[in-house]
Amino acid sequence: MIKLVNNSKEIIDIWREVFGDSEEEILFFADNVKDAECLGFYSDGVLASMMYVVRCSINGVDSNYIYAACTLKEYRSKGLMTELLSYAESAYSSLCLIPANEGLVEYYALRGFDETESVNALSFSQTDEINEYLFDGCSLEKPIVLMYKGEK
Image 1 (cartoon, rainbow, N blue to C red):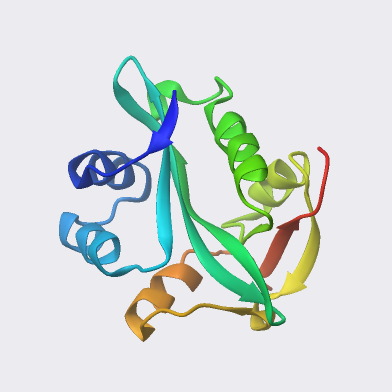
Image 2 (cartoon, rainbow, N blue to C red; image 1 turned 180 degrees about the vertical axis):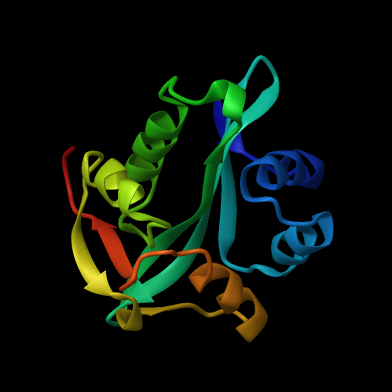
């Protein structure tokens, strides 16, 4: 079942397992990000997969940025993230993200994120501290923004 996540403890548990950040770092982000929602896929009452959707703009056009997309190890390769992405694609008029690595470029391209833009085109209405989170974590030599533009 997909629904909005409002429980910080659930967010901490999955985020910490996947990204290794401290509880303090996760809570700082969750408590201070604005114009954002956390979507979660629940399996047997467990938050198994999640993503933040943060309002942004690309070249001055409103969009929604996918951030901290992750799935608990025991639930991977079951299509949960694909279902979350499909839900987001139908719920938001425009989506984009910065893939963390080369493998994710291909992963997201297969799911309809096949247009690219410079990260310089991406902006948020967030504090500098939250902006650091949103732009951090990419290991690509030249980070890019992938945009969802239609059918998979």
